Image (cartoon, rainbow, N blue to C red; front, side):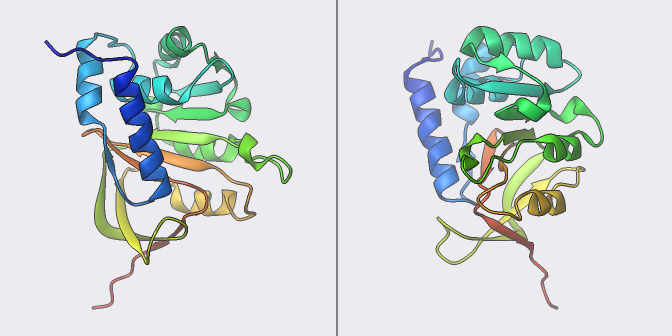
Length: 202
């Protein structure tokens, strides 16, 4: 029986996340690693979020969880990574689960820290659970890591695009996004990525 390898599998996921971040629009498939972690039986916290926390968090990191089960999930993430749960406004990572309710993503974007001109890296990253991410041509991406253009679609009832653009308008200040869907496909959108709606002219 194959079990989750806390060194090898996390290194693999880290490479996938780095690859997806350096090439916005290129989806990372985390299904295999998520399935192995699910077999390990940490059921109170979605395996995709635990996997990303194991990959990205350490004792220096702060985080906030937006979910009906925020308290339980925060406790699990703290136990596994030693990262510290804090208020949304102070968090290095904000985890927004689909059960967080209407408006949670907008609240997270509004409250997320966007760094300072001297220390833009002190901004937050938002990890957002959505229905589906794909390369359908709904949104067009341009910017570093994209040769010409790339296309994505993010299936979620939450409004986020306009709020992201407002939050990131004073580069290098801003926030970074990681979307993870129900099929464990990961989409990374760093603040350097320009996003526009792809209006097809018929």
